[in-house]
Length: 499
Image (cartoon, helix red, strand yellow):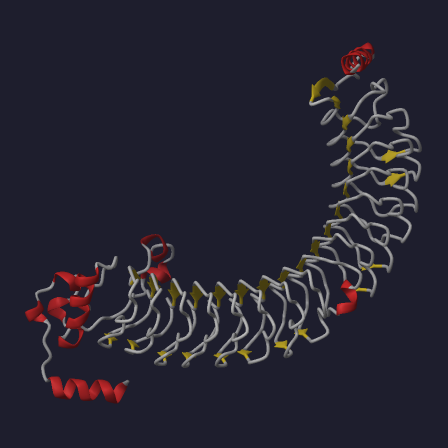
């Protein structure tokens, strides 16, 4: 039976000659007949005639079509895919897609569309993917998307939308991905997203949103929200409310300078939170309370100067914490206590000039610690105590001249110390080529480091800077007798006075 059907379809498609300037072919894969008519890039001003009524995929992209009249595709009852992107379409009759009961994918992106009549897509009962991005769409009335009950992907990014009326997506219960980035949205009305119970990804980046409220997301079960590069200034306790299914929130590149206590406390499933590139200056206890499931927290490129002790105490599942490119000047004792699962901590490119003893206490699983590009001049003996899992320590682009004896005694698994910047980074700009990586004083007080390095077989290279006769020499290869102090008593006294 199936062979008979295929032969009928095969004969029918080739009974009608392929339209001029088009390419036609058919295939039979796993019981599904595919008949493709490709008329892309042919300078067409209208939809060509004499297309086989059995066509399943019609490709008309990159032509000069300007409008779609009523019943433009009515005779193509078997059509499953229709590609009309990169034309000059500015007008679509509300009955243009009549008869396309089997259509699952419609691409109209990169045209000149500004609006649609209500009911334009109402006959597309089986549509799954609708691409309307990169047009000039200024508004979408409530009835425009009526009938699209099975759509799973809707791309509306790069348009001119300023608002989304309540109920716009009310019937789109199967929608999983909605992109609205690079529009001009200033506000989402309460209920704008109501009805999207399967929504997985909501893209709202690069808009003009100044505030968010939990009512915006009422009626959805969204998993990922992207709000980067808007105009948000504050996160309040009512910004997100209770989103029990949310796993990722991206707030990169806003103007956030305040986060109220317990703003995220009801987001019980949140795993990734990005607050990078904002205007935060302090991290206070209570900001991240309740975020027990978060595994990645991005706070780089803010203006953070101070981190309160135990601020991350609730985040027992956090694995990666990024705080680079801030203005942090000191790490106090037990700052990160409670991060029982943390494996990577990046504090690079700050103004850190001091580390308290016990600065990294409470990090039993930390593998990688980056404190490069800061202002450290000394490492106290207790700074890295209890970091028994630490494997890699990155400390280049500091001014370290002294490391207290025993600083690495508790770092039982430490196998890599990056004392100098990678050559590719150091030579990437004239400014970086002029920066020295540390300034080690090789006297009797540092002899222990030579012994420790040779004993532990750590992957590192450490050169002396002073005294002059040892400058540029690898510490591990210098004869122990050359590590001298002019006056040990005075030297130790001065170091205690300074540090």
